[in-house]
Length: 107
Image (cartoon, rainbow, N blue to C red; front, side):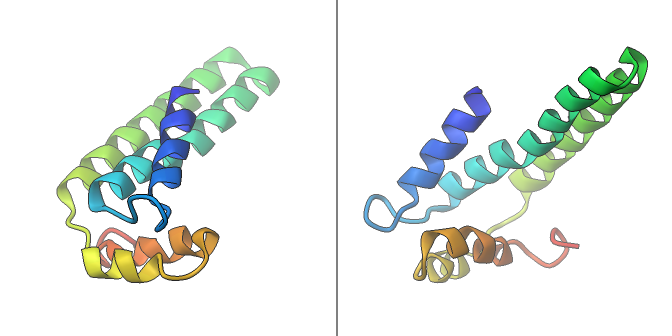
């Protein structure tokens, strides 16, 4: 729940009427919101599958989340692309803002 709350706060703060898009806020948002889907899936696996399978899936999600954190921390973000993405509607802005990462990260 803490990941969701902080990610939602970053999304709120990146509204151009407040602070606007910043590299730090976008990185925090990206790092905290992306693993939420995998962790939600882990909870479903615990409900529907054997505990051993769920443990393996949760470990895989933890490894991928750590890889995301490391990759996100070392990759530069193009501030100009980020600001340009947030010129339109906020919902579309987060989709377009991923282009601020270098191509090597988005493969």
